[in-house]
Amino acid sequence: MTPRSARSPASNRLRRALPGWFFLIPALLLFIVFSWWPILKGFQLAFFEVSYTEDVASRFVGLKHFRSLLSDDLFFLSWWNVIYFTVLALIIGFLVPVVLAISINEMRHVQGLLRLTYYLPAILPVVVVSVLWKYIYAPKEGLLDSVIQLVGGMPVRWLNNPDTAMLSLVIMSTWKNAGATMIIYLAALQGVPEQLYEAAELDGAGLWQRLRHITFPQIRPIMLILLILQILGTMQLFTEPFVMTGGGPNNRTLTVMMYIYNAAFRYFDTGLAAAMGIVLFLALAGLTAVYFFILKRSERSLV
Amino acid sequence: MTGVSETKSALSLSVALATRSRTLISEADLKQAGGRWFYRAVLALLVLGGLTAVIPFVWGVLSALKAPSEIFTFPPQFFPKPASNPLEWGWGNYLDALQKIDFVKYFINTIVLAAGVWVMHLFPTALAGYAISKLDHPFKRAIATAFFATLMVPFTAVLIPLFMTVRDLPLLHLNLVDRAWGYFAVILPAGVNAFNIFVFKSFFDEIPNDLIDAARIDGAGEFRIFWSVAVPLSVSIIAVLSIFSFMATWNDFLWPYLVISDTNRYTVMLKLYYFQKQADIPANIVMAALILTTLPPIVVFLFFQKHILRGISLSGLKF
Image (cartoon, rainbow over all chains, first blue to last red; front, side, top):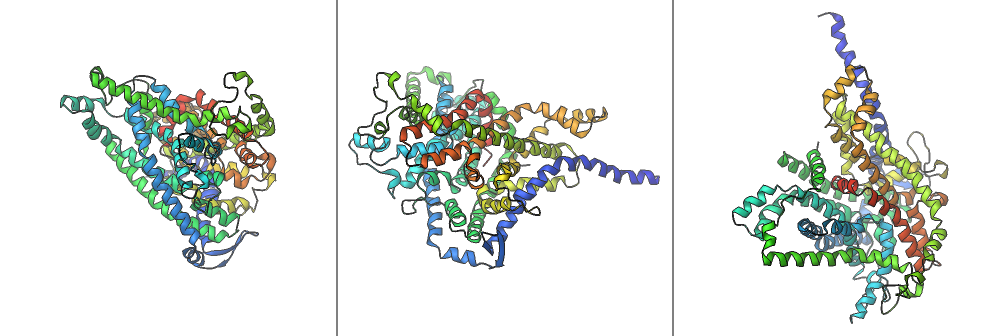
């Protein structure tokens, strides 16, 4: 072995790593400045007194912000609201796209048109949908209340009524989001091997049995994934209540995200807002970890 | 990496959408009288449900053609007056809204912003995805893991520290929220997109290494190989991600709302938000503005329907 050839693998490796650096550096710089650094900063801010005007974390205060959250009724109310929204959205909305996808997948007529129709609300921007439904929900004279009165009911006063305000948001977001989820289920249904249905039929399995023992087990992994994605989405609810109710009436639609926003940009208490962000982060990170775990496991079962 | 085969199978599956294959119900089921009636009942229910899916939007389109007093009435009226003569409906309201909201100006703003965001959504991510998939690098695995780990961090959880970061960039101490910096406070953070890196990486994984090696032997540099071998082979995925990038910019609200302070630089959605909050704008004009701001996404959707429906199976893994 000559000295030259002993040296060359090392320099070779360096030379081969160079293009790699070149390709990675733009993304690395962006991630450092706009992702990894802010994540660390979020943890720092939560333990400091922050002066909003100077943007400096001036004084270490330990767990002070977290302690004040513990005695903050509004903080607990915002979590209660978000959990209430999430549970209600699951009860009302989780199965709708599944049922839609399974039945539309069977249609021999106007299938494309049906798919398009149910997908339409998903194309509309959130702000547009929120304003549109604010008018639909308008008390007494809005579309919904006037139809209810027409058939002899009492006006519900949807968004103005503390008992129905959150329910109104759930109905609207189900209407808006079911279509996109349905498309994902449709794609999953296309992947169910037809031999399974044929074999089941030969064994004399009826419609319900085929549905229960073939269709559902085949789309279960994707259902689980979409379940978690839906929870992750609803826990971060912001724009809809921000545009439609501003968190009212009586803070009944104040979500965690809105409260963080208020703390930071209305009360200028950045440290407190950051502490709330950490709590949200930890709650969602747990869910996200479960999500990736399932993703990984279902991947293995597919291979 | 997680989800590769998910992504791939989702892609290949949606290609299969075109051809009808055997599903839950067989043709034999449909030939029986009971099966036929069941099928018809389900179809009827689906059509009814489809009506509820479009009625709110259609109501918005029609309400924009009414006089303000006709929108909130009892009993409710679905069609503008006179219902028999659509020519006399308030079509001018749409023109009115177009002018009042200064649509063209904010449309151009949004397009400019979307172009910038598009660059950040695609270029750094494609480069990084290519490096992770095809290049030798001593810390490749660690860096890839650090990229993909950010998928675990919901955007809203870093909202406050990210806002403070763009107000005071580390080391440089620049305030990107300042109007002098235009859209940079929106555009630069858009480069943090681990999902796109992941999609590119799994797409580049499909390109045979032999092809890359052959180009190397021919003396092509790494960037040249990336640009004239990998990118042309990925046009379909670039199209999907581009459409999603545009839609995201058009619809985005919270982040632009926080960092675009210059009223002349508002996006359409920001302008719409402030417009509908004004007390002196009648409801029919607001409705017309709502419908107008929805047209670009609808047009894009109708043009790129196939791409989008295929892409949704991808974005199902996104949050």
